[in-house]
Image (tube, rainbow, N blue to C red; front, side, top):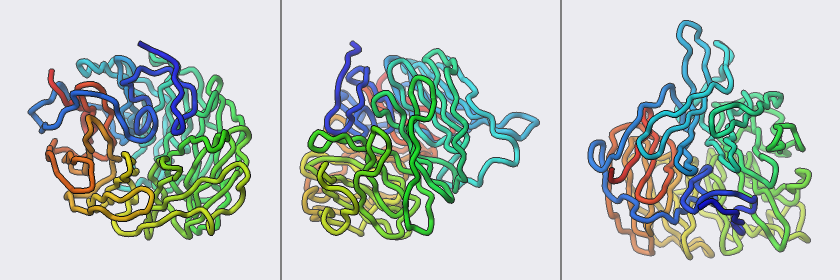
Length: 416
């Protein structure tokens, strides 16, 4: 049954979602947690596959699930023109049938930016909320569709120079849509009106980092009654006021750039990655309403270098923080102190962010191998599952099923 709920402190935007929906990047709370049951433990390319559907074009946006339908984006070449059609798709969760496939933007031949091998032209994950599907294609624009595939509005006036493509996904902040535009120069952050797409506010991203491009998805938290948009970028993580985008506080981390992981929040601490060239995991005490400005020297609880990810987001469960490096080293640390409990090589390279479901940790490498690990202070591998297809997208989860996007397909893993 659909109901109104408030997720505190992780997601404070009002949302109408079913308990087992997965409506945005990293799920209903934006932290990779699922309350689903009967989630599959074992699978491969042929076993425990309910269906797989070929997805036209290419893209690494993660699938999202609301009600009976899945949504994702893709970039499909247009025959004989060389243009790219930037599209949104809707599939039936029950059987994988494509219900609709709508072009949102068109990128002309020769105008598409260079794309990193771990990126694409359709990497930001959709957000589905209140019967609307919000999709973001970076410098090409942002749009809102209804759940029947009709475009309600397009916003394509926010221009910036992309580096390696786009990546950060939009989040809902009350009646606004927030995202960052951290391009090759003059980065900025912006909030759009969810009803119309009009710019509600736009603020420059102030940074001293030499490389200004980053790709992180923000997190909305509340500290002592004050809502804060936590938005990592090159050189610093910044808390912005939802009201007008003014800066509340910041913590600097040097020249860190191409920042990708989405922050998670718990134990009164923010956990995040700091990007290339020397990634670190930071645990930060967010500033209270009376604590403003540069808090670098006073609010960093701990940092950790070994095993820090460039791309996958972190996952907090109980007193432990889990993460996996791009090179495949999974680590468990004490969330409050940073003490390492274990660090183990899973194998392969990683981009997807881990999820927690059925009391188990799920990690997916870029070769399509899923690793299932038991949470706790001792490492225990429960399963290793190979789909045999390249995969950089993160899972969507619901009762009895995992939805996994690969280079060519979307899979429903779970009993038919």
